[in-house]
Each structure stands twice: as C-alpha cells, then as structure tokens.
Length: 492
Image (cartoon, rainbow, N blue to C red; front, side):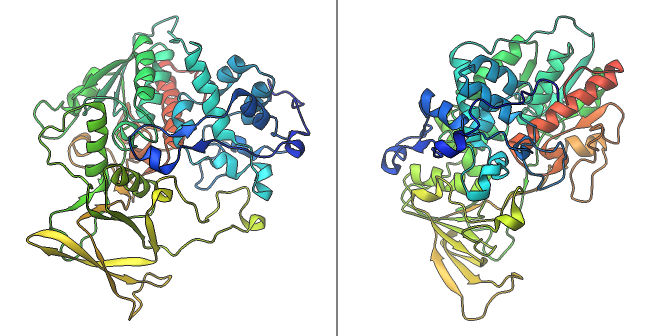
C-alpha cells in the first residue's frame, strides 16, 4: 500500500469531537427557488470533522475493489483516511490531488452520492460515522475556488480515435480518462448539453448545472470534442448511423444509460395528467437553464394534488420539484413495507443497511404511504382526478377491506428504469443483451459482443448510482486504452 501514511494526525479525534454535518436552509426559504440549499461547514469545522477519522484497522470506507452488489465502502475506492488526514493537516491541495486520483468528479458525488462509505465507516457502529461526503465536497469546491483543477493535457497523442455515445457520468469519466491517455475523443450527445441524468434528471436544488459546465470546459481544454443534438441510431432527423460511426473510430464506448422507464399498466393509465418522472423533471431543469422545451406541453404541479408513485431518489426529486412549483399537496406511494427505523448493526455493518431514511425533499412536507398498490386511475373529462389504492402484505397481495382513494390532478411515475432503450442504437449495432435487457459486457474488459465496441454505466449494469457510473467509465477507458495500445497506464 505505497503512499499510505501509517499514523493519522489526531488518533483521539473521534473521542474528543462530536459528529457535525452540513445543515440545510429552512424549508420556507429553500422552496422559493431552485438553488442548492446545503450550507457548507466552515474550514475549522471541516478540519475538525476530518480529525474524527480514527486510524481504524480495516478502513471499509475505501471499498474492497469488488463489484458485487451491496459491497461495502466507496465504489471508486477513494483513499478516504488519506484525504481526511490531509484536510486535518490543512493540506487541501494535496487532498484534492489524492481525491482526484480515484474520482474524476468528486463535486458530483459530494452532492448526490448516498455515501456508502459512511455506512461502512467503523464509527457507524454507533451511528456516528465520519462526515466523508461533506469533506469530499469541501475539498473539491476549494480546489475549484483556488484554480487547482487545471486541464491535464496529454503530453503525446496516440493517433487513435474513440467515440463515446452518451454524456452522463459514465461517458464523461471514460472520455476524460481516454483524452488524458492521448486519444482523440468525440462524445455524441442527443440533447443540447452534456451530463445525462446529472443535467436533466437531478434537480438544480440538488446540483446546480454550472458544476457540470466547468468540468465540460476542462475536458474540452483536454481535447475532448462534444457533439450536441446528435442522436446515434433511431429515426429522428439527423440521427447518425451507428454502423458508420463504428467504421470511423478505432473504438466506441456505449454509455447511454438506462432510459426505459417502468410503467404502471392499470385501468385509466391513458388519462391525461399521468406522466413518467423523466418527462416531468427534465422540463423544470430546462426552464431553470433557459433551454427551450421544443414544443412539449408543460407538465406543472402548481395548485394541484400530486401523487408520486415510487419511493426512491427519483420520487424524492419529483416531490421537491412539485413543492417548488407550488403543489397543493404531495403524497408519495411505495409498494414496499416501511423499513425499520434502525438497522441491526451486528447483522448489517459494514454493508448498506435497509432502514428508514428521509430525504430533504420528503422533509419539505410530503405524506409518505408504504405497502400501497395502485389498482386504477379514475378521471373526469379525460383528466385524472383520483387514484384507487389498496394496502398489500409482504408478498404484495392486496389486503381485503383496506381499499382507499386519493385525490390527484397530477400523477408522477417514479418506479425506476428497466433497461436501456433497445430501439435504434442497440438493435442497429446488434450487440448482445443480458437477461435483464442491458448490454452484455464483462467487468473484466467492458467489451460487448461486437469487436471494438465497449459499454459502461447504467447501459451495462442497469439503473445505479452516479459513483458506480464514474467507476465503470474509468475502468472502461482503461480497457479501451489497453485494447488500442496493448498496454495502459490509466488507473483502474
């Protein structure tokens, strides 16, 4: 483990300093706009929190390097004890170098990662983990503020050309790593701007989009060329033929995400006012950034009773957006039973525990209902007005006598994504899919069934976290570099 210091700066810090994390602006204030509302800690507070890192024997926060679901710790294997120590010592620039050695975009994960590292922290055995995510965000924000994140331009060009299709976190990570290895990299993005779900799915109140823009500028300075409004495959006017693209490039990375949403095919589904979350959320992000909606009808929550079906992060984003648009009420339905308030540490630690969590958006006034199945939509004049629901048991079987109705003038379906869209790009290329409908490519080399075509991120693994997309993008870039050059110096 070369480069790992044996001793931490303050090995008794965890005994002397209480856990103290970032606070939020009050609900009434933050609902007035779509700005970020997390209040950073002061420099002294951040250094004190870093001092709580306890030089434990096995820092599970690093992650194990495994890609198995539920693996404890950080998917990109951030060297968390090291950067905590550097922050405690006040060596912020070296902390930034350390952090960026494993993670291309810590400003994304420092805002929107659920922080499996903190769940696996040794101090989480008594619910007081180090505030790793907050420290990570403080390091990278300070690095940007101080101008430390200069473009890293490859000293030598390889003469090889790589196309990256899709500019979400997996595509961006792959493109940046490949450019730094000296390849000519072209990113094709069907929308007007880069970022994928970071740009169009995650609301501005969780991550303002200038954070993506400055990273894109860095990548452009490193030699990455972005092609916007360029769909690859499909029948939209101006779409690029994927077969032609494959001929023009030495390697192609498919990083298009998992965009096919899970539907709710029950009676009344065709009523107006029922929309997928990913028809609703991107509209608001485009409004905030001044990007046109291109003739799409407005989906707005103002003055309406809103029901969000689905209890995950996308559902939370729908709640926060609905409240900021002026919803009369927001109810969130989840088919799973309510999780326990606290986990059994002896059973779960250091793995990610199933327990009751309340997102900042849910705390803004949503009513949450668990173990609820929606059986039909009712409407008036072709518009949705009510949901018919029933409570279910742990096998999702309806419980007789528990039927109820909910008023709803806007219903948002946030039940996740089943797999990437197959029509167009994937069918034209003829790449093999796995049994879940994702692109088949192994974790050893990220190669698809077609020569020189690779895949990473949600398109390969199914819907997942931004931090997993970054890891896969980095590893895919390493595999492509090795494929093109016969060897690679890129980190895994």
